[in-house]
Amino acid sequence: MITATRTRCDRTAAWGHLQAHYEAAGRSFDLRQAFAADPRRFEVFSQPAPHLFADLSKNLVDAKTEELLLALAREAGLEAHRDAMFAGEHINATENRAVLHTLLRAPAGTAVPSSLADAHAEVQATLDAMLAFAERVRADHTITDVVNIGIGGSDLGPQMVVRALDAQVARGKRFHFVSNVDGHELAAVLRGLAPEHTLFLVASKTFTTAETMANAQSAKRWFEQSGNVDIAHHFAALTTNVEAARTFGIETTFGFWDWVGGRYSLWSSIGLPIALAIGAEGFRRLLAGAHAMDEHFRSAPLERNLPVRLGLLDVWYRNFHRFASRSIAPYHSALQRLPAYLQQLEMESNGKQVDAEGAALPLGTSPVLWGEPGTNGQHAYFQMLHQGTDVIPLEFIAVRDPAHDLEGHHPKLLANALAQAQALMVGKEDAGGHRNFPGNRPSSFFVFERLDAETLGAFLAMYEHRVFTSGALWGINSFDQWGVELGKVLAKDIEPRLASGNTAGLDASTAGLLARLR
Ligand code: F6P
Image (cartoon, rainbow, N blue to C red; front, side, top):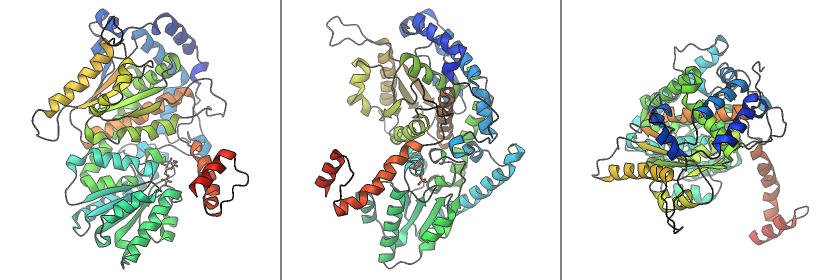
């Protein structure tokens, strides 16, 4: 039951005030003038939050913009909607489900609403069992390779975190992630494996996803064809559908619950590869970092609440400036998979065209998210960010302490991050045209002291809540994903046609392509 009601942002009085403010001052806002006029701009628009620091001062906002955006959030009912999520109300209405990934990171002993006490106890029991298993496997030196088979939320999160925390990963085990139904991927991984030294994790919330089932079947066949029979020792399943995993032949299963969305599931048993990589203590630190951010989101006043300020900025950019894209530039090569992870988080959550009541939205929702680690991106698409015709807000992430001791590299890396953000803002005048940099291009800048489990946990939770904030204002259900269904259904229809050649009822393009691909 949903007790909290939201008012869609475009139906509030604040919306009209923002429109007027955008016309009067927002459209022509100039960052260079704003810094010149306000010596405290950095302090006012930067925001410390648990485990990280965010400088938002190079964004196209002034105090008035923020004040109006905060009024918008209040009028839209953001706080009530947030509280409804934490309370376990069924805010995912199209699937009639609660949204409780935050419960996964609430440590034992945390006060939770009495209606969630049983669920919280189950979370703790499953976590303890999963972490005990992880420690046993970590100590088992016969297992040298772990293969996670899963896709979407059952792949992107664990893969991104294992890569990001590579410096803390115990040596002696290699981690592989197989997601694509394209057999090239699994075949390449299997080539380097010995069955008796391999642990396969079949990760699927539903245990029905076509890609994952195909890969899991092939992995099992490969394992059995090698003469091995000890499936119990070499396969484990991470799923809400324990029965299907058992039918598949996997005895070792770690469950989770329908109130954990796939893209919010790395905190559940889907995180087992992370626990195998960084250990039980490391995994608990990841959860603790996220929990600290949950508490910040839940209790900090909106004007000093980092996910809220970012979510409001996202609405300002998308609906007033009409920026359709945002780029992520992690200046840390271990964060290579972060943009892909954030793509699913934001675009699958907020890529919606109707509000929670099913009414067509008259405004833009999720921007396109994309990016590459710096400095690589600088030598590819930064040209367009500096001189292209579209303004694309950029998000920098820089880490103060490196996890290597190669001399001279880190200052060069950090200098580049700072210089790019500076260049985007200040620009450079050149009458000749080709060397002219318009400047006034917005960016946010996140500073981590270290890339460790707590910091990463906090950053990811911050992003989840930021996506929640913009989704709440747009009045959409950020927790379903009906848009992925149609393609799945059509693929089922097309697959047998590739064998039979039957093109009856297909459009001419699909039929022509199918004939070429046979
Ligand atoms: O692509 C749609 C989707 O349902 C994602 O939301 C999800 O993360 C992914 O597929 C994988 O689903 P499952 O974990 O059930 O295999």
